[in-house]
Image 1 (tube, each protein chain N blue to C red):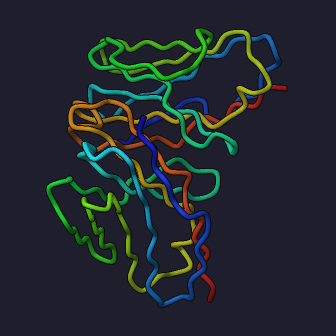
Image 2: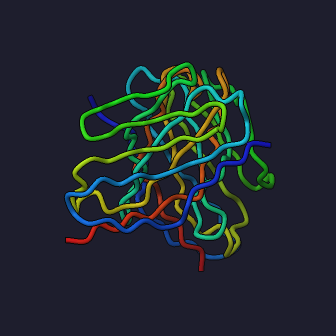
Length: 114
Length: 111
């Protein structure tokens, strides 16, 4: 059974650009969550999607957005990149949600903003 | 809101047991996770425990939960050099959809 797949693994972008990250959950899982990991702030929740609907959102500016497709794959988008957006972005996959079933993480996308 | 605390660092000799501790503030947390992160990698789910359990054992891993003190621990028996990593505890409420993580404990296993 394939795990959670995040693409790309690494990205380098320039300030002001926008970026799209992708997450393919484990087959059959309908919940996808996104987290940002930085040395200073640790792991912070961005948002969670279930069956194409955003169920919860963290305290991030509107530049951070996401969506989920009918096949449960999810994308997150960051517009007008800032240096502080440099981080490891992790997505988590679970069957119905991490509060009900185990949450498995992907390898992450490391975004560097220069 | 929810707060989860972990000690920053643990050093242990190969073959000894490691105990990583975690405290949390929200007594309604029902699902408590332990994840492992190696350098440059994502989070690997090690184990989890429901709040209606006191203990869970899975091979070399033992999770203990003290609900009264809101204290969670992970014991790794016969610690190996491959266990060197950062360990995160995370908590969530039933039917919740946001994991709250501790800051991580860096475990260094010395030969």
